[in-house]
Length: 406
Image (cartoon, rainbow, N blue to C red; front, top):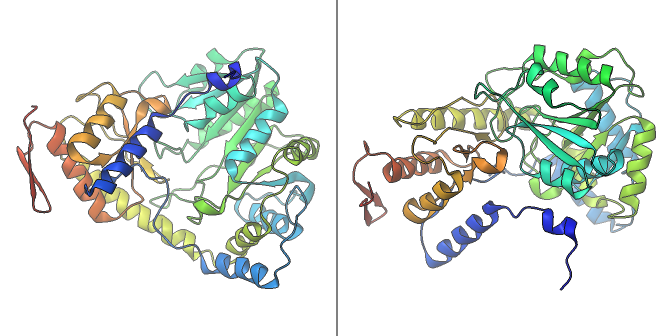
């Protein structure tokens, strides 16, 4: 069988094998706790469901314009007016895709030539480097030398070359929950505008924040029009409303670039589903208290997770300021995060995600999306499995586990 060299270059995610093993363990009856999930347990907003149901009731489910339905793009325009303070967004600036992931892929396909470079700030979402490679680009990883989750401008500048076409900025950040500072965002926007580098702002978590923190918007730090700025915004309904299965995202960019992305999408997936676009429109135009409710739930879970992790003697924690996750440093117990994840699944029946996938070896990404019970029991199991100071025995239901490896 002949496989393209490009397809062979795309890395297989160790998370997939861990999830499959967890699934098989559950089939056997093992009480596995999943602390790796990237979706909350909330119900979709009622406004989204009613909007989708209305389309289904009509029964006239056909193609939509490739760039998205006019009414959804109108809702996105209102959203950018309110939350981004950008009254200059027009329908021609928007393309709706099958999730923010496709929106980002369309963008990278449209702006990169072979061997063009994209700077990616670590920690980063696992798909960024692979998506860049899929369009023959070169991912360039920048990691803060001080071990923090925000590199300095000086560190970024060291990696920028004449081949750099874009910098991907994800704040609030998956996997760390970090929110980049106003000063940093302002400096990076100015840097990109002056050098003609695209500032790709992955905003998928931008309202899911804690402790009343406001996420700096890159648009606040440019005086350029939407047609002239190098800022491009990626967003969607998956995280903001807990609508991960609806797969609706979008990109806001200059009209000329948007037109190219429409051509790209037209030759691949064509349109997003009319029903799901209606659901996204309902979410955007409906009561927004669901977002605040989800944020509050996540903040409460964050606080419980931080309390539980502080019981470890060797774990270093940077409390997340937003998103669905935290990224503690477990390197004192095992510097190989993939190995540690496998160990925890086998011994403690807990699913975690290795930090190596996010450019942070020795760290584990833990989800705060689940129940308080899962968080407490999951962390208790992890502590029992790796911390010598924890009790030697652990009861899971009526089953007693004895630790014999420390």
